[in-house]
Image (cartoon, rainbow, N blue to C red; front, top):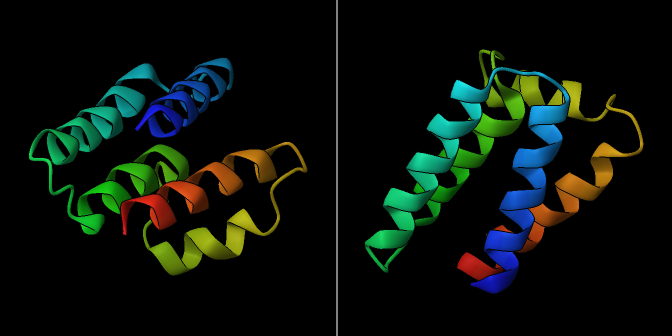
Length: 90
């Protein structure tokens, strides 16, 4: 669990630095906490929270994935964190 929280904290800091709207970050983190509190996180809850954090206003996950491929190099670090969270949670 420590890696999960550390990764989410870093992700939140990056999003705040990008000035993407703190309420969106909080909403995503709240959904993640709800899922974790139930101790059977339900991978869909984790993914939903993470997509809210990363994809923000994008309408579909598919569109978001297309755009994620075009992101700058520094974002690959955050994508690695998310992938590791998904594997750890499953």
